[in-house]
Length: 226
Image (cartoon, rainbow, N blue to C red; front, side, top):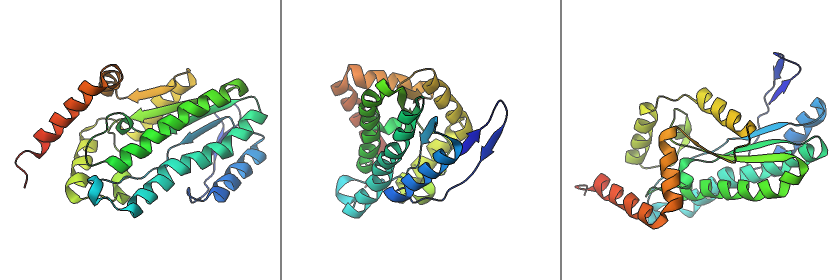
């Protein structure tokens, strides 16, 4: 958590919190906001990954990812919003993924969790707008993160994701800066890098054609595999 007091003055403090524990999340947010006299900005980015076909992804893995990726964001927003409503408004940014709309195969649990974050953000945008609270959903594609360190995924899926991350020329600090800048400027859906924006438009304008295109990509990717 970061407190900024005047131009160029900042104080950073850490709170180790289990994002699946609503009481702990609320207590940490309340403690920080009460001590600092309010809350202006919240970036909810905690997340994990699960990969595998629908039939090989266990119910336990589904519960694990939904508890963290979805309910963790819900708990955070529920803790943050009251402080912003009580103050002069604020900005909530929920980090989803390009996987929320470019739903590649063997990623059903992850895709569903990130699509839920977008739906949540769109819904609470409407609810909180009248209170001066702006809500944005960030949907980044591959960039260099530590996401795969704790992923529950087959080795081939893990290797593919790590390769795509390494190919990206984007670091996490660059992505964070662009997300915050665009959210502060009023964006509600932030897709980056730029190469992913045409996928976002394609999915929205021609969803059936988009799915057929995604299916062809899967067929090419798995052609020749036993």
